[in-house]
Amino acid sequence: MDFFEVVHKRRTIRDFENKQIKDEDIKKIIEAGFCAPTNDHMRDWNFIVIKDKKTVITLLDIVPKGISEEDMSNLIRDWNLNDNEQQACYRDAVPKQYRMLADASVIIIPLFKQKTKILSADNLSQLNGFASIWCCIENIFLAATAMNYGCNLRIPLGNEDEWSKKILGYPDEYMMPCFIGIGQAQKDAVTVRQKTIDIDERIHWNSWI
Ligand SMILES: Cc1cc2nc3c(=O)[nH]c(=O)nc-3n(C[C@H](O)[C@H](O)[C@H](O)COP(=O)(O)O)c2cc1C
Image (tube, rainbow, N blue to C red; front, side, top):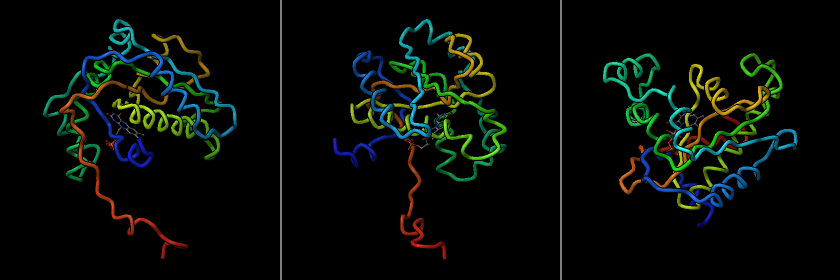
C-alpha cells in the first residue's frame, strides 16, 4: 500500500471480527513503532502484548462497559462538545470503550520511561519521552493499517493505569500512555466522519498574517 493511501486509510476502528492475529504480524507492527523518532536516541520502550482472554477481561474490569443516555448527554455538556461531528464521534466511541478492547485480537500496552513527574513538568523537554512514545504509537497505527488491520486507543482514566500496572506487573519507572486494540475490522465497522479541513486556511506561509 502506498504511504499516502495508508495515511488516509487509517481510521479508528472500534468494531472487530472475532479473529486471531499472528504473532509475526504483531512483531512487525511493533518493529515499525521502533522506527519512530525518539528524544534521547534510546527508544527505551517496552510493549506488553495481551492475547490471553482471561488477562484481557481482568485488565479491562475497570473500564466502563457502557453509558446511559443521561450520562452521555451530561458528558457532552460537561466536556463542552459543541460540534455536531464531534458529538457523533463521542456518541459512537464512549459506549464502545470496553468492547473495542475486549473484542480486539490483541491489546498492546506501550510503556515509556518518564523521569520527572509528568503532570507537573517545568518545561516541554521534560515531556519528550511522552512525545516520543506518541510518535511510536502513530507508526504502530500506520503499520497495522498497511497490514489491513484496524486499531484504536484508549487513554487510561482514573486509576486505570495503576490497575494495569498491578495486573501486568510492569516496573514503577514505566508509564502507559494508552491501551491499543488491534484486530480485523468488521465489514460494517463504524468510522466516524472526520472533520473536513480546508488546508489553505490552516497553512500560514512565512507568518500568520
Ligand atoms: C491523544 C488521543 C487520545 C484519544 N483517546 C481516545 C479514547 O480514550 N478512546 C477512544 O475511543 N478514542 C480515542 N482517541 C481516538 C480519537 O477519538 C480519534 O482518533 C478521532 O476521533 C479521529 O478519528 P480517526 O482516528 O478515525 O481519524 C484518541 C486519539 C488521540 C490522538
